[in-house]
Image 1 (cartoon, one colour):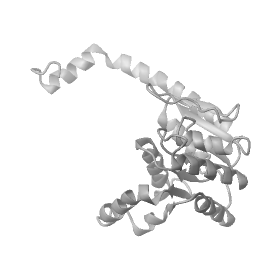
Image 2 (image 1 turned 30 degrees about the vertical axis):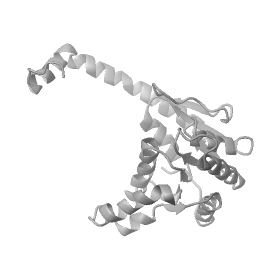
Image 3 (image 1 turned 90 degrees about the vertical axis):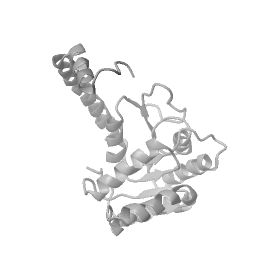
Image 4 (image 1 turned 60 degrees about the vertical axis):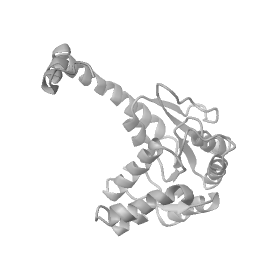
Length: 238
């Protein structure tokens, strides 16, 4: 670590001497307009797409993987219900979701600018390729304009999107909508931890365990979405 002989307090003070508060505040204030522009552009486009289901999962899974193939099947069946499909717009599970919906229903991609990966897959409909710099703006679009989440196996990003939806429903910031976790062999450990650590220590309630459904095939995933909307109206989430 540089300046290891200096105290932490001295290094903190030095960092702010190098860049004054006024400069930082000006930069942060102007950032608001960039954020606002992403929200405005997203709202204007997403309000026109109609009911959709978002599909999440790893960008790293290839087309010969069983979950890639299952994702395409789920997407095809989702379009049979009259829903469009929203993904993160990139490769892997995102590509599989757009691929399954392409030519059958709306196929939307909400891409995020990353320094080391992420490019639009070729199965997104013209006019529905949207770029975002900010993860939090992108997550608002996923939640606000989705009537359900299909969550395939994935990494930190997939977990982030799943936990965002669970938190918003649990805290009644949005109405309940179906969340389907596909692959009990993958999600089983996490669900066991929910029960053995979170529930056991009183950090969630028994009712919170009903906010999601775990399935192992495309038919069951789509059936859960279908059953939900046979009982409830379709609307934007907040």
